[in-house]
Length: 188
Image 1 (tube, one colour):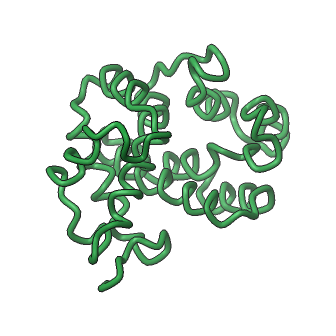
Image 2 (cartoon, helix red, strand yellow):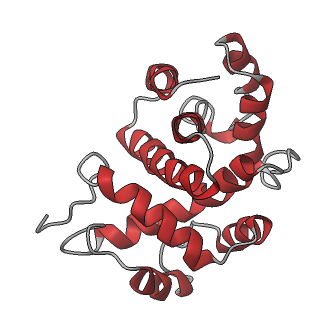
Image 3 (cartoon, helix red, strand yellow):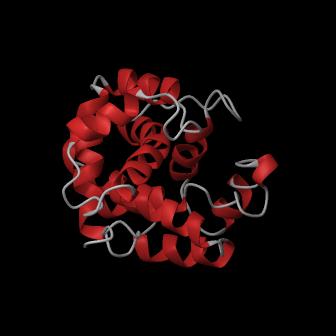
């Protein structure tokens, strides 16, 4: 089973761009919170979240096509690699998210982008971001327009959860990492 320490070692060797590392941390934090929600291994889910875009910087046009072999060679279990591949379901591949870990990754990958964009606009960043404030922005399709709301909704449906419920879990998960992910705000 991959540890968070090993996931950081692997990802940080492949990813140099700061915004991609911040995205990895956002997803890592959210996956940890989702693991707690489902009563699963937080460190393991965080490791999968941190490593999910392993090949993106090198192969943005072929994302996830260069993930399986190197991660298996690095010692990840086939089900861990499958979880990572599943976040590309319907976009890049046909690896359908089936487990709670896979469904969570599929959902929070996009959702954290909206949370980050919303928190960056606030004087106190994510520290006082409420689900109500986030949902106002979420409903505005022009806000964080590149974040696929249909995919987020599909992921939430697969989880049997409302968007606001998953968003609240993610916000709470990301909040302790506010300094690392640049979401303390201008007055933080």
